[in-house]
Length: 415
Image (cartoon, rainbow, N blue to C red; front, side):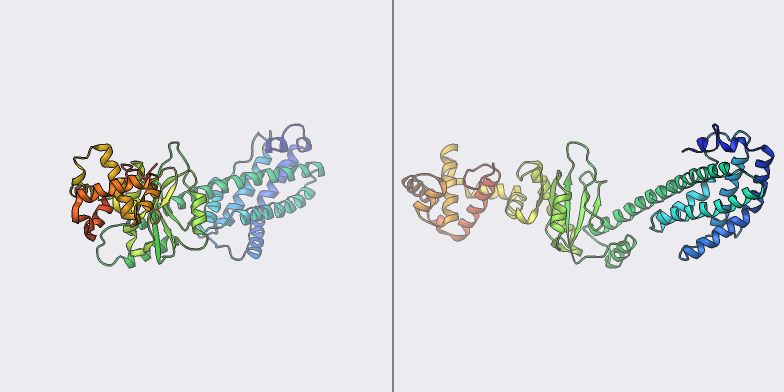
């Protein structure tokens, strides 16, 4: 039932003579300060933990708000036509109540309970006044509905204030969190950053962990909400490639939580490192994401760098690997593309298995006699250098890198 329905239309209150309505309002307004004080005392008794905030005149803001709310309700009641809509609620006071609950991290439950208590106490006083000025009982019963409708208006104002405080706090926390992440992920620190880290972490209630892993995310093709990684994981969506700092990444339940939260996202999480080395974890995650963009690492999921160490080590220093390949694989230059590739695949299989023709043939899926023929050619091309441990290491290094790029086939070639 709305306020306009409670005190308008064809109601028992409409039938009350105007002089009785005015008399009721006069008495109620006169007793409003005492009623407000009674409600305030009961609130203090039931909720002694609530802080008392004073206004500029030194009067409790809650007492002022209660008195003004009572007066607004009674004046609305006194209007000759009981004009539509709720009585005008003093918005600043009740928004401030909701704002205070939000800023102190409390829910609105206790505030709404206080409002309901106030309505009950007010109704008892109004019922007593109604008897004194001979207001008919049916009209007083309708007044109960109007009172609870008025309560909804007070709650609405408090909810607005609460939402404003929550938004302000969320924005402030994001700002402080970003400053913490900037310091944490900085490559070079001026002086000892430990005190600054501790201070910034304390301001957002983030316990400093012993180890962290830093993640870099690729935004989905379609706009998506931020992944629900939880308060313990620092997440900054303002970067072109969002970043996150995962505390104690191997803690019980943490991998499962991240897996669920990051479903539908892709990116990479760097290796776990001591807190002071967070920038190193970030570097590896960024490197992995670059390889994902080039389709050299699987896309469509969030990878862990520790599971792709070979690719990250071999595909990162491309210029060095390419230069080494030119020197190490020079003997294949005149073999032709197809034959040279087959010899390279055979050489890599031999270096990895350290076995004879049967083992290499099984690895490549060809006949052992074919492998023997190729191995003889390899020995002719490289001569005694093929027996040198350092040269074999370099050859395996460049051939593995080529396989990771998809330039060679084999059992672990990129698909």
